[in-house]
Image (cartoon, rainbow, N blue to C red):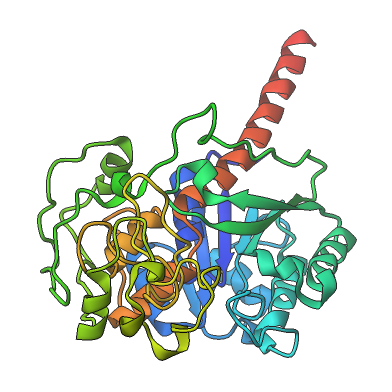
Length: 383
């Protein structure tokens, strides 16, 4: 059982802090975080007051340094979080493979686990990790953690199943070394459950924008929150931040005029298509130049909301998504302000674990810990 009412966590490869924020919402104290990205570090330190941030490559940071930063001893940490960079595994990376140095950073996570020996481990990554090198990475993670005494399994999670308005598939490894059963990540949304949170549920209250238009920081919302999702994400927010539309070239504006809600590159006249797409089969590039549907789910938020990459056109405005809209699809609260140039803000949002998914993972761990407390109390009463 946790020794206090506030379980403790450390977050490796934390980026802007999506996983940290989710665990914090569930009741964890985030004692320390680490990332090499200076812009993500700026965002994290601004949004996680009281958390020690260790900047720089994890290869240069010892487990002892994490213990000192968190004022802990080996074995006393409740949960070690982490999302080693996924670009080496991603199916969007056509040169992906184990030759990419980023593909080996999971080994650094294992090294820190061995040095800290937390009760629980949680590690997130893209589904491409299961296929790279014929599954060697997944096998190596499981073998290494089990050798350290952890009961651990990989979970395939769908973000939309947990109230996140986005199609996003991820692998999450969850384990503990204290003999507990592993959690069941039961869906809360979907068929027979709560309805999925839609695109318009997520962004319908944000100010209207034209192509290239900038919204002053702290601007007012379009209207009062109209659903639980808007209400929750606006809680504690004083206004709208990170909500400016990228300026697209005239050719892209001409293309968007032909794309209806739910449409894509197939609706663009051939004469306006990029040269490389004019001979494309209708079965190819299915989400390129896609316009989102209000009643549908957003496409997976990547490190660019680029029209050439997928469905990132606003459902009713002729422009691409803002950083705040991408953050809404990732379930970041509105008070969570992203720092750095806009290109870096998109990267931070796209690389993040959706906070609501992190909250679900954290609560699944707490439910197991709390159920054990209840069973022990009942036994003591009987005795």
